[in-house]
Length: 355
Image (tube, rainbow, N blue to C red; front, side, top):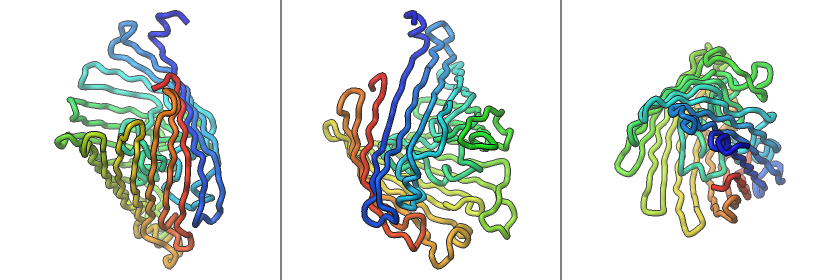
């Protein structure tokens, strides 16, 4: 490839894998390996004089069984890598930035790369610390997040640490006949997921708060009730406690008529000690009234499921990280019949180029 082309187009690849073992309390003790591989191209328009234009394409493949459902029975997925999908184009978008304060992006977009971003929580293995389950549960096949995105338009206004983001996503992620396959549609073709988020500095901390709303109605959890709207809101405060120690807390809500999780509370802290990053976090998802009455027999339904995670990460080489991990699940799946479960894991992450 000519030197000029190398400057215009950059290539990267990564693989992340989780080795997981369900120990005490599991209804089906055993181990599994789940993983995700990505390869991407970034187009740098400024290199050739297109100062306001960039583009990105990401091809993704995931593998592994349903460890969380089969081994643990937990709703808040043990590994953020677990997915039933086929290899596919995960993201493909172009971004126009006419000024340092305004940008617009269109294409296949990961909603969680634009909204509800938890920088401190990104260290953890459980999916609840990536995007709140109040949002990730929504939609006919989930919103536009891993493992399947949908077409979207995102407008962002930014002034220092202050910002406002507006997004319109197609309501259905994936094809109508098979959600494991990519579908290219105009946003809103199958209904739209509208989302807005504001970011405000609070001293050294950052406050994020937003709301989301589907334009179409969904079957209510209670079959005797009329079709219901799916919508909700969230707020998160994140920042440095001391040098080398950061923390966050997040709360989210969702319309309980159409969604199982009505309220969510999560948070944690991460400390840097030498080459190690040590983290402790908890996530609590509570069922709404309709879900408690319909998903399980009322006498067997717990109101809340809680996951506590202790994790540690360090680089082994510039291109390899290892991360031993422990998770303790309390009231998995809100099911009174299931026992609290301890899960041990090891995450390893490889990236090219390193860093």
